[in-house]
Picture (cartoon, rainbow, N blue to C red):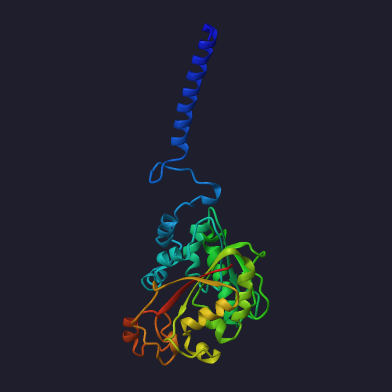
Length: 300
């Protein structure tokens, strides 16, 4: 081999060795060995949303909640319940029939910056003597009184006895409802409510609900549920799954083993309603709020 040929061969060899070292370094950086704890960038599909715990904690302590509402936290466990349902602050959430806004006051600040939040109400222009009309007007008045907390909350007027629309089809990440299913079952419109929820949820979207839990094997007829407020858990799950949902998880977060479920005026005998007034009030106060099931469903 000529001198020029030997020089060219040495140059090629050095170049190949350098390239090999470079590829080795790149391999170590981009593909860590099994068990290596080196950080790895998430792909867009693997993005982990920011934790919601801090926002929930701040909201629960916020001035938009009343002292009467805070007093119920010990029974309703809002932080744990919403965490169980998988709430994120960037979700599109619909809360159904929020009553006086107990959970609304918790959810609104959490979703204000990055999410979308809607609640359903009855027609505030309905008959003035209807409880539903009064409730809608009271909730809207609360929103107007604190625009910093509730100004971004959208309202959806619904009549559950008709075909309700909760928003564009497949537009919501989560639908929540608290202690309402027994009412819908009692007047036999739960199927209409579930159909509306199914339509608005995205595939993979979550339906989270709590309700007063009857004893296993308890009555499932509409009158018994309407009169007592208690629903057998297995029956409620069956009804929701028949509408196309899949049960994802159950929780005992809101269980209350002290609840004997045999009161003169059903669940409304217990706090916070105390429908019997002062009669045996101490006894019912010692029991606390009802034994509740906490159920998480997914729309396939």
